[in-house]
Amino acid sequence: MSFDDLAARALDTAGTRGAEYADVRFEVVRSERIETRNGVVTTLSDATSRGYGMRALYGGAWGFAAGSDLTQAGIDRTAARAVEIAKAGAAIARHRFGAAPLRAYVDSFATPMERDPEDVPLGERVALLLRAEKALHVSPKISVGRAWIDLWRTDKTLYSTLGSRIEQSIRQTGSGIEALAVGDGEVQTRTFPGDIGLYKSGGWEIIEEANLAENAQRIGEEAESLLTAEQCPSGTRDIILGGSQVSLQIHESCGHPAELDRVMGWEANFSGVSFLEIAQLGKLRYGSDIVTICIDNTLPQGMATVGYDDEGTKSVTSDIIRDGMLVGYEMSNDTARTIGRESNACVRAQSWEFVPMIRMCNLNLLPGNVPFDGLFDGVKDGIYMESNRSWSIDDHRLNFQFGCEIAWEIKNGKRGKLLKNPTYAGMTPQFWNSCDAIADEKSWVAWGTPNCGKGEPMQTGRTAQCASPARFRNVQVGVGYDG
Image 1: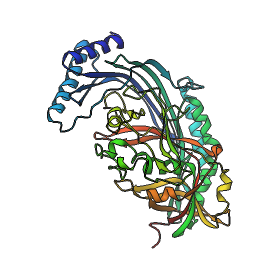
Image 2: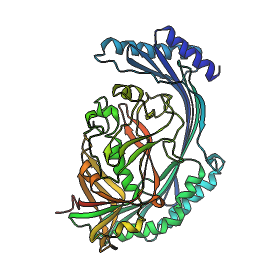
Image 3: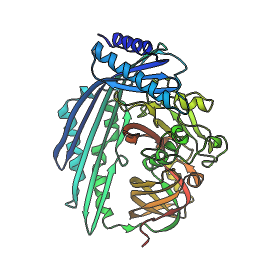
Image 4: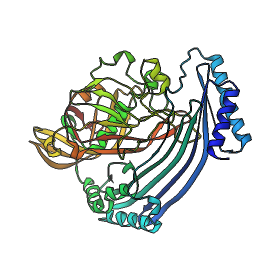
């Protein structure tokens, strides 16, 4: 039977058993990874998973079941199970919030790409990684060099009792390099691009954009230089953060706290809840006037760009922070309905066997109007930091501490000597209110995150935080290294 026939049977079975609404999502997911380490291919994996997940709504409660049995009997069992779970939930629910999508769509979406990675011979992929990884070894002190490529292809079709039939083919691609230097009583690491690589939606052109081999020697040299660099000082300084670090700052101190299920206390796994409250919408000054952070799941090459989310809601743009004020959340249909709004298509599942839930998507800090070099003007005594090395944030997303791989002092507007082990700390609203300059769109990068964790059982989500480097005033630095 075709997916169309199986879906019709699944939705009919759910309706017959009492579901007020149901949807079923068929997926075929292919994941490939290649990694080289010290001149050897250490990982070469290619896995494909097929199955379907089904949601049923009954009495304001959701039931979810999944299966890989594509026979009629298998479909019937999974549909019946989803309705059974929904009825069990409705029987004990103290509050009833379940809500179906508002609209039905019959549509398709495919990730635009210039070159299909599947058309690139395996030998060409491996050769690129070996060449880049070899260039990291600028001295015997580089004890480990790594290079990697990740490729994902997800083909899925969502059907619903509203009449939706949404077919999507999504391609996500990423790569990176890492140099580990050991010597002089130190261990230091440098990665590129950013601390986890460059991940975007698209094809082989994303690998080429990363320019791994062209930057490998510099990354190896920086890792070695950090072994003898001065310690980052402690105290209060103006700081400039590189784009990938700003991306993580958005992810941890805006993305997770703005998930409406956390705000409402429905979700607390793998990031806690949130310091935000619904009553703060339109009232909380989250950042300075130049801070605008928005969702754009239509962004070309955004790691989370899709045509529709896993509830069948069409991708939109939506403000979270506008001119420094909290104005929105990342929402599903049921959470949005509770605050009188419509979903902004932020529901995702890791794959067919997982229940969809609110996930961070493309969350973008809009660029400013200052060239990157202009950020250094007006900084008499500051520090420029790049690439995350460590992070810690409380389970309300309020107090945080981050460490970066590398830093340089700034004296009278000029970049100075190299500094090792840079760290900074702050409180979320105060920190974003200290932002007084953001680099322009020439430095704006859609930094993808391929491994965001949430839920219990835990699901891995692929998000993006698009950002340019930014400047923050009077920030506590050197935390953890002040003796």
